[in-house]
Length: 389
Ligand code: NAD
Ligand code: MG
Image (cartoon, rainbow, N blue to C red; front, top):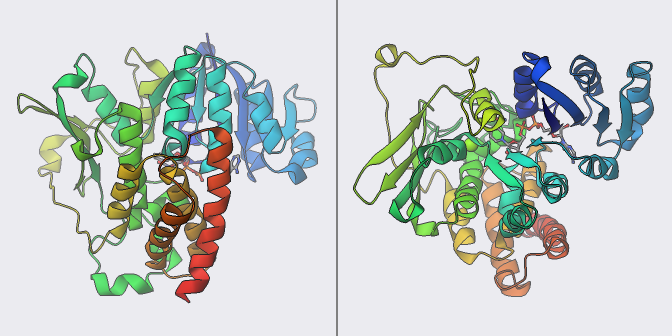
């Protein structure tokens, strides 16, 4: 029996994990499930997975969640503090699938109890990569990547020496606007940005895929997780989303990871690691697929990639500022306060201002410093919006 906790159980990644676990209840002892507004789903899963505790991050939903779980024996809690608290209840395996910087503290806390952290929450690596990796080291904990590209790289590296790695290539579908004329992008609407050609994901990451902020975050995630020189990491547009990443070695070999665009693969790999499980994902028929295509990303279409590459070179707290500015700019786009291309303009401006004024590069990466820069970058993003007019 493996004890498991899922942070962000009601989200897109969280639900894929629930699907894997519910198929084999005899193998798992569920400690905690956490979610947000969708407490009906949270309560349903807590009952069918026999979770010890269910937590919503919204204080105002405590009584409603209590009523839903009355008489079931499932403990109930609410609020951000309650989420951080359940991270203290040790689980063998913890999935971090909260969206945004809010995933950082629960992940760090779970690591401090020596869990194996299956990390979908890329924001915690982008904002505080060195802190996360060091916390794992200090407590004998393990971090396994759950982002599909990073799981692919991790799998391509099994049995290899890092000294023999020359480059890491992560692929990108190109998102919703890959075939749009660049001149039209400024007028892209929320609905248009919220559909993905290949993956079925939460709305925020889907929009980040259209702008390629998601791929920019993944560049930084690659650097932090695999501890490689930023110059070794490349992005390749691959429309089919079947090859998730490739690792290039000093002898010229490229090891590619190929699989269906289904997050249950990367989650399942982390769940069964170091073994391979038997997963309910599609088996690809390559003869039927016929062709795989690759192209270089167009920097004019995807300015977020260059911003992320600069941030990756800066290091220090630049990642924390980048992520927070991006989260705020995305909020503003979703609220219809700014246009699609303004997101990159705002983030770029915040990084420029903060690297000049707020000392991002040389600061120490402590939780306090990360939180401070995160809050400041959100304010700077708001200011940048007013300045851009
Ligand atoms: P989602 O929006 O579908 O779900 C997010 C989950 O986090 C929900 O359970 C929500 O209730 C919870 N949540 C939101 N705000 C919270 C807060 N402030 N405090 C606590 N809980 C909160 O998101 P998703 O698409 O499942 O993505 C989750 C994470 O996985 C993100 O970091 C994303 O970048 C990463 N990821 C997602 C996919 C995908 O296929 N969706 C693929 C790779 C990586
Ligand atoms: Mg990804």
